[in-house]
Length: 386
Ligand SMILES: NC(=O)c1ccc[n+]([C@@H]2O[C@H](COP(=O)([O-])OP(=O)(O)OC[C@H]3O[C@@H](n4cnc5c(N)ncnc54)[C@H](OP(=O)(O)O)[C@@H]3O)[C@@H](O)[C@H]2O)c1
Image (cartoon, rainbow, N blue to C red; front, side, top):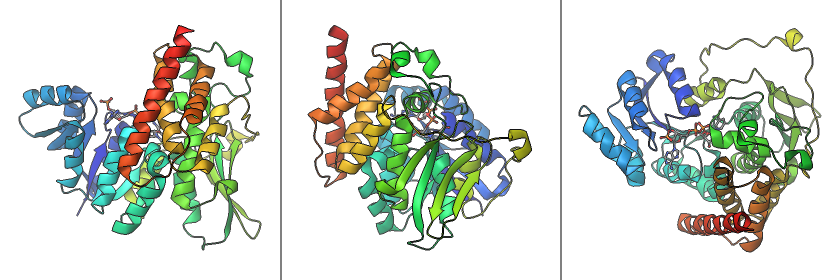
């Protein structure tokens, strides 16, 4: 019997690549539900191509338009519709490819139902780390990471006994501005920030890669996924993006996961785990590559990574505040209302204004998220007016 799969954020970079993986999976996977925010026309095309009968659009206007245009299936509307797509359906696996903290509620809905989760939406773990992992443990649902670095670590770590992994090493491409000084970054454009050297991804994660906030979010994600203390997670710049991450073991061995950058590999792993299937990617040619290089991260210039580590160590609501302020600041940068270096400054000021509080419930995270968005927006307005 095929495994019944829901793909959330199917119109995005991860979602489209996931559908490509599914179309090659033969009888192993059947897509039963798809979702997007507002891209209803693309979502209807996907539903038609993959024989899907249930879709959700978190934008109610887009959902209304899709309902008018599509009479063969069910269109669910708004954030509640997205939750119903998961909880009132018959899926056995959910791929969460939504961008931003909007992915947290569907992550909670999935794990709360005891449904396995292939997780690309790193923000779910950044914002709700402890509560999300506790929920998965309580219901027995598995979280299989789709982020390439975390997929690599998942594969490396799974055969190691507890207590044998000394360090986790996340690799970072360094983004389009690797090696630049702060003064060289003060006037970079959105187009320059979107020109990632090795990965083709959605807009928000591409800007996060340019600021190194993406690596900061991944640091927090790794802490929660693998239970590794922050002090034992390192980040190293590796411009070729061939080594996806490494673990260091107590006997002196270091294990690395290598491959050309192609998200279909970790997506396929997440959807087929614990099986492996063929993915049409080039086998690694080490001679052609010749050399792999590694550099120290410049956390003075790329302050977002420092801020993420500090927020992770502070715990409580701090990572939620960091993430929300980042989403607001990146949005403002992409809209031309904020300079590149101001992204980190706005996040730092938001964190200073909203000290970390302990987290008791998902509701308290929602409040912290809203507070941080409000403060970050005020700080951006103040900068624009200055
Ligand atoms: N792209 C990659 O290669 C990559 C690699 C590793 C990890 N990730 C992670 O995967 C996630 C998705 O990244 P992406 O690059 O695929 O993003 P993306 O291309 O921007 O796609 C985002 C998807 O989420 C939907 N969406 C946006 N806002 C939403 C909301 N408020 N509620 C419900 N759905 C919403 C979008 O729908 P519309 O199309 O209607 O806007 C779209 O389907 C992020 O957390 C990212 O960090 C991505």
